[in-house]
Length: 358
Image (cartoon, rainbow, N blue to C red; front, side, top):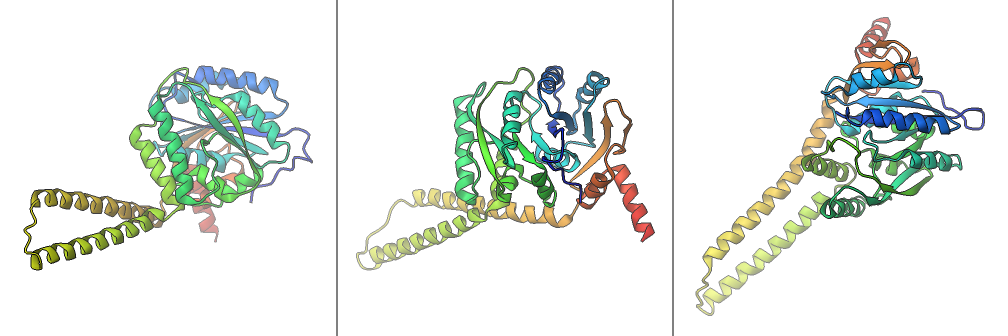
């Protein structure tokens, strides 16, 4: 197990900004400039860990160029795009500090709020999350969709998850270590952190608009993330499908009895078979919908039992240090990432060596 840092026994607290990114070359110069200003005014030792989630633009090269003469910057580069949640997970497995702040690279998670999170964490809280009170640069439909989802998630899962809070949050060292115990193939980070418990508190803030670039989350990916979040923590959609199926079956039996009584006792012809055809199509579509829900749960089980590595690290780089395949990881972190289903060329080789020794 990695070493645990004690706040009381350390003269200088260490905090790492964990920043997943995908094709953010337009905003990176502004981001690093803001980070340097933030680091200059904070008393803590602030380091930065970028997780390049398979960018195909100049993001990786740009970070290296700008930070080559600066200290405290690291880049972990995936072999391809594995997704935002796994990028966050990789960062939490690699970080070695008293606390970590998960934030996006698009400057929509203000660093001033990150400073408030650090100050609140020093008061004794293990998780300090940002609550989005306002969203600039998004339509009313998008804003309402987010609000509706957070409330649906809370209703379906029965988790004490904060409303209107994304992944922007500070985690203490013991929360990071607890998170590393999860081995889910499709982690839903904010849900897992809410599930863990610990002392958590929110900070309200206004989420600004992007200064440059565009969001990498399409509606399809947002819907997929939303369903993954609910499916990870609740079987209620399946139970609701069963209940609705029972209600519709009961109604159909009553309808059949009524039709037979009208025909046999009162000799009444029942017109409107065309409408019945459309009703049949409706209920057929409803059945297919819930079959898809069941299939999604089965697919999640399928993904979990395959036990593939959750992501593959192509290389890692440290400002002012060496470039390699994980050489800058501490021995503790590197071994932990191997045991957690994380593959790097360096860690894979180390794993073979350990097996040979046994």
